[in-house]
Amino acid sequence: ALELKLTPALVLLRSTLDQLQEKDTAKIFSQPVNLAEVPDYLEFISQPMDFSTMRTKLEAHAYCSIADLESDFELMVSNCLKYNSKDTMFHRAALHLREVGGAVLRHAHRQAQSIG
Ligand SMILES: CC(=O)c1c[nH]c2ccccc12
Image (tube, rainbow, N blue to C red; front, side):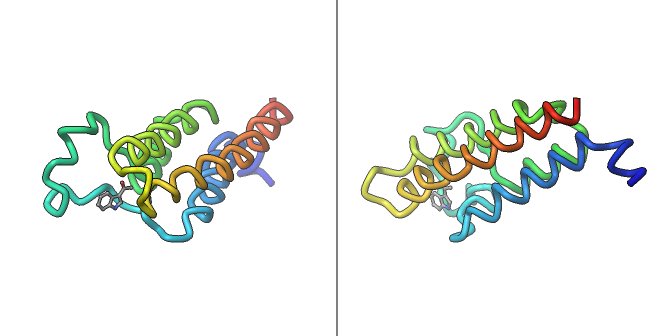
């Protein structure tokens, strides 16, 4: 109970990130895109993002709000939509993650308001 009182923001950020990552059932967003395997990736994507990087940033207190977490989530999804053509599993997975992730984030914003 004390931990919840002292660091409710961090607890909420962690639980939101966990819920977002659970929706990535194919685990295509778990780790950074492998630049050795995808040598042209940085020709299209200037700022790569993935869930492991988001988790490192969260634990380093780089996120001050749900909105901060949300912008890295949106960056990660839009990178995927940009790099992968429409007829790929990756592109479809990004569209799906954006939809279901949006619901998770809307709920998290409401919870953040109630924490105050
Ligand atoms: C998330 C994403 O775009 C990718 C995740 N794994 C990949 C492998 C090759 C190209 C792109 C990707």
